[in-house]
Image (tube, helix red, strand yellow):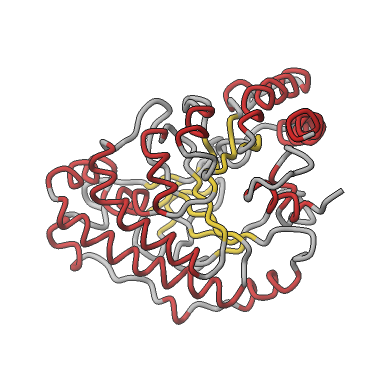
Length: 337
């Protein structure tokens, strides 16, 4: 048997993998929770609230809430507390957090303790360009500004991209990760928030610079985007994304694999509402995982995983990941021989 790291690299390069199970098994895992841990490129600069806390202000001036019954934090916006109140004067409203003053000692220690022989070391670059824009000014203002003030919006996000590239470079310098994941949701379950034309005009050039830099450092690129984004799947390849993590079943996953010519590896496919709810049984979870693998694994460029990164409810993670490993190994024998 290959190691999880070797199998992951075989999967990404389409080179005779031995199983098609839970890809989180390929990464270094937290000893207490058993969940994959991420080395954070900008932990201090992007600090948000923890689960169960509200009204926490990050280094950008954005206020965050994370109620205990919600899957993640969201910005708390009002007309008075938006950071950027006028996109044409965006430079007046905030300063970029100082990356040179970050203390890397804790993440360096974590990186040093990582199992690099059998597991993938993965870093994260939190808050992609689109999420940054609506965090700083509110969702409605952001969508309006993409359409009505595209030059100013591009100028803002270009400056932010420079900052993210510097952060990614420092992360690679201090931690030497094998892969880096960027978090940016570009749509709802059924459509993109921006028309694909606008996405290509404003965001695509920025991502070409960002992912191009990461790849130039020899690091595998992963984009978390648990929404509909099929319209720009070929663009993902063009900007240098190796893996789309979070591809939801509302996307035509076999069509995405076909359109991208096997160059975009797909993590996701699990219908989260069908398994992630109070009282769900192991039987239901395992059946859904088997159906998902049988439907998408024949593309040979796919691994099953939770689209929303992690499930919310008790027992779902354990049952699902176990079935991913069991049925994924069976599927690999059928598909790859």
